[in-house]
Image 1 (cartoon, rainbow, N blue to C red):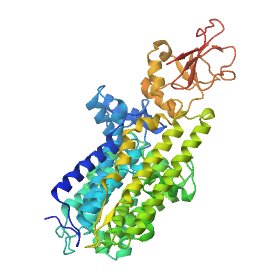
Image 2 (cartoon, helix red, strand yellow; image 1 turned 120 degrees about the vertical axis):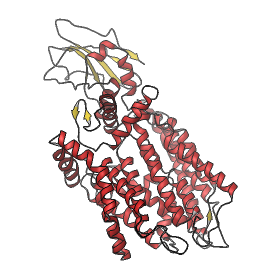
Image 3 (cartoon, rainbow, N blue to C red; image 1 turned 45 degrees about the vertical axis):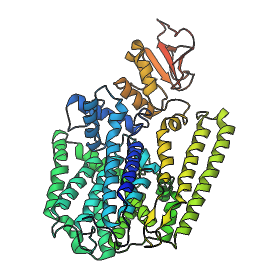
Image 4 (cartoon, rainbow, N blue to C red; image 1 turned 90 degrees about the vertical axis):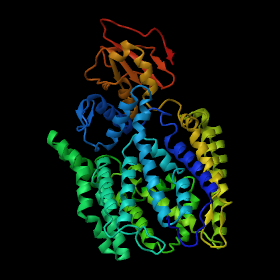
Length: 565
């Protein structure tokens, strides 16, 4: 029998069917829709996708290779997932879908694992809140659509921490006794397995985060004996069998692996500003607020009001230790990127769901006021964004539709908060709360219209997809191409879509060929006696100019300036 917290009313079969349909639609739309809405952006996505495709093509699943050379910045879990989908889909699906599916699946795993934990401890209502609030948050939607290691790491780490919660006895029955026997073999084995997968996703940081979270939880609750249960031989063996084989094989084949991966890309990245991602200590506070859009007002309300634990204080302490240490650990780091904080977001999401689920008649009024303030704030923001976009679009580098797009997105945030005002508390029991299904629908709708929001944000395609597809149709250009002052993320994307490394233009060693630049001026870039075409071709959708570089002995022109679509 499924246990429920005392006093909670379970849903009727018809209500459960309705909730199931709504939740399935929300999970699919927020995590799996429009995975190929845009080409690979930024410096990481195209490189990770290249490595995954190379694994699928070469059959070497041990050594990650970028442009034919070993590349040890990250472990292989994301590459393995992408390579599997590259093999399964072949050319029948866009490469963006194959490369991003591991992140979407990892987001789904994290959400379902936490929903199960919420259901077995806090009840059905808390699980429903989590399944609608967490997937519709901006952070989970965004990172589930990125071919990056952050979401696979967060997904495997979250699953490991859920298994840890079961192994140390936090999941209880109505009699407040553990649901598993004295030695929870399955939970311990799965804990070691998922922790090993997290180490394969991003590195040994997973061990530090999990160990410290359990350590501080043991300090708060004084349950040291339960905490040491995670060091059971079954958990250690499962971890070693999952994580160590790749590390050993890769080190045997590549003698410099540990120096590059452990020393340079773990210790130096954390302890030094060598990788040029320096940010202030408080950097992750605004990042968390952005990640939990549109539920910022609800999150602030939950934090200010506290949480009713109702016999589950140990789990709440565990979630707090998990989330707060993750934030602190990455705040201390000298190198900070927004995705680093992702392991803390699922835990905070469950704390948020628990705080709202614990509403009673006394707190419902303050909750509604907070939701109303959030709705009003986003409505005003929507009007301001529309006006700013209308006034600045003629001279802006953004798409002329950007102001309208952002205004509509803020309006969807406003409606999401507006529908929360109609939440109802259960006056008979003072614990359960009914979540209006409409609260999740504005974010589902916004995700369905993601192509409009994405493409309205850019004047030109920020990826190398459009540029690569255009150049690939011109064989003569593709065979002898150089890149000038191009954004490095777009350059990596161009490499991926052309399926070869396009070299940078070297003014000290010029060559005859074609040159891509962001501006219509090659003076100072092409040294004498070489000359470049006076009227370059212009790629309208990507915003680059293409020059023909020739020697004095064989001058050449492109035949007048023209736009290439």
